[in-house]
Image (cartoon, rainbow, N blue to C red; front, top):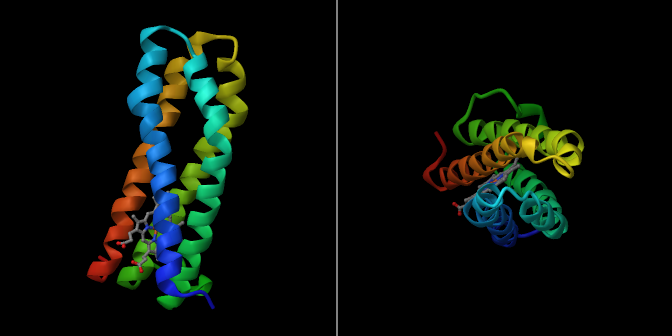
Length: 150
Ligand code: HEM
């Protein structure tokens, strides 16, 4: 079984890429796209970030679940909201599910329309902001584990 510290490093590196990648989008490309009314800033960045983003999200889930198992939070205890660390893991799994819904909606509903119509930029902006805020929330939730959970 993989060492907990190694899993944590993989988890933190992936969190850096996932949250950092979205912050670059929010702080840099999104404002530029809005200002210049040109969605290509977002579309081009999205295309480049996608492989890194997907890999980091997959690694976050795998390393997160393996670490949860090392804390005794196995699948039969998920969503019980009974013990401090299990509460964190269960909340993170719910937020992960929300992230997947936003990602699917962006990929199949919003992005194809945004491709040739700037009027979908506000809808895309909402998706980007939600995924970014959820990512930051998951990062903050994770930091509670070392204090024994909540
Ligand atoms: C966007 C997704 C995620 C982000 C940004 C994220 C971020 C973080 C961060 C920053 C920590 C803090 C580690 C520390 O305090 O040293 C952490 C810890 C942790 N995360 Fe995540 N995480 C994500 C997803 C998940 C998922 C899906 C799970 C499992 C269901 C999970 C389970 C854990 C566990 C168990 C810890 C505690 C590790 C420890 O301190 O031993 N995380 N996470």
